[in-house]
Image (cartoon, rainbow over all chains, first blue to last red; front, top):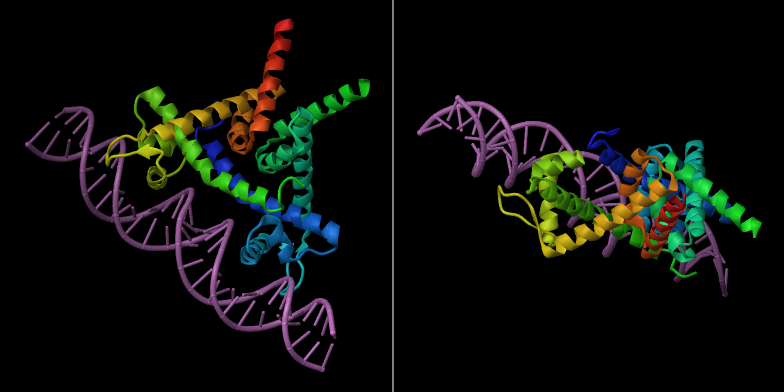
Length: 142
Length: 142
DNA sequence: ACAGAAATGTAGCCAAAGCTAATATTTCCT
DNA sequence: AGGAAATATTAGCTTTGGCTACATTTCTGT
């Protein structure tokens, strides 16, 4: 067995710890690119949580070096945050396209991809990319 | 847009709430089928977590009607727990087989499937099943 | 310019899921 | 039967991620 019995679960737990961070920085980057700035309210609406929860989550993100904030000012991403955001959104995009290519209806694919993206190893992402390309190729032949 | 902005995130959060329950009942069912009975220690080892944590999680599972416990006795599944366990393990199996069929190496597939299984809609599972069948068909033709 | 609306911040609460340490019970072996 | 080992429980701590209620700041429209 390549992995010890408990190690995989430890990984899943630590995945969970970074999931929110990934979702947040991804959302922040997206909102900034759409609206110029990202405020707490935008995030509260996006994640359907109270602004208080957003506030404290942002606090943790700042503590961990992903964002910079000033009181009563919009949220900004650090370099580290931007890196995580683009990695995260690239992964998200792959998973979404993959599900669609697999035949999953858009609506379900959109929802599922957000849950799945955090649990895909590089191996899995590579296979997804390959599958997408093959599907594209098949499309063009018709 | 088919879903409201926040609804999907609410779903993802409630998924999280049941993930542990699913993992536990699945593990309990498996351990019982392998060893006859399932004790707290088995679960602690399985999930790489202290036995105290197991104890309290089991308490929540009992509160929610998934398991029955007596002090110093092995854990047993209720009918509800058995149902969840078999649904959960069926889903797990589909995801695992799917990843393997997609070309993901066993080790990665095993790990990823445990994270992914909790985030697959019926739509996605259906497409995965179809893909597995097609692959099997292709194999047989050779 | 200023009043009210909107946004942000603070205090303090809750439950889940993790831990260690100490204690209790059961089981198993000699 | 007695003691060691295994198992279970309890107490008490931490972090995360939710919440409401209230206070403060900023923005906006007249």
